[in-house]
Image 1 (cartoon, one colour):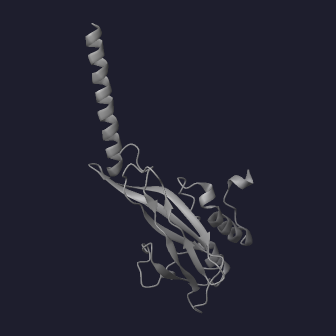
Image 2: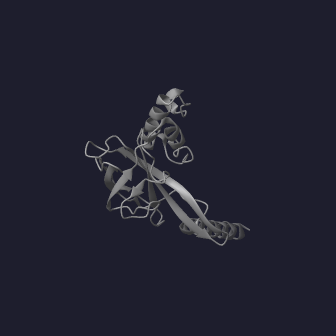
Image 3: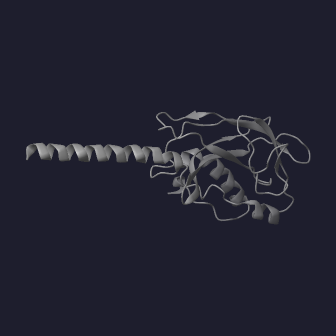
Length: 203
């Protein structure tokens, strides 16, 4: 009986090990652990200028949203995995550095997109006149220096329509990684007499 019991436990351990291996492999194609691990988040850099005057715009909140598209027999799914942010400097320039995560379980690489906001200017990429010069508006590639043009808004009605809180759906991004963007949005909302977006700082 003891030998049979020993064989039973060995069988259970082998089955458990096979299950864990399949689970890990499954993260490469949208498995149960998806989308947690990633190898690295690519850099983004560029310059933000006024669409009309072509002068640099300092203090633009630049939020990089990183996500991964996974595929399975049920179809494709897109998951936000992380985010980083910065502000443009006096020359209108910005750089979001490369971020590495160790032990990624061979998950592959994430994709990313940028959201740019400055009070009084059209938000990129949502505003129809904003653009990434020479690149796809909705998909400017990382690791390439790109000039972004934001249009100056002419009246309060335009500014109110422009204040769309794009960071709200990204609950997967830690607050510390998007607080500059939220603060900038709230600065515009406050100046327009609009309701502020709640943050942990308000609690």
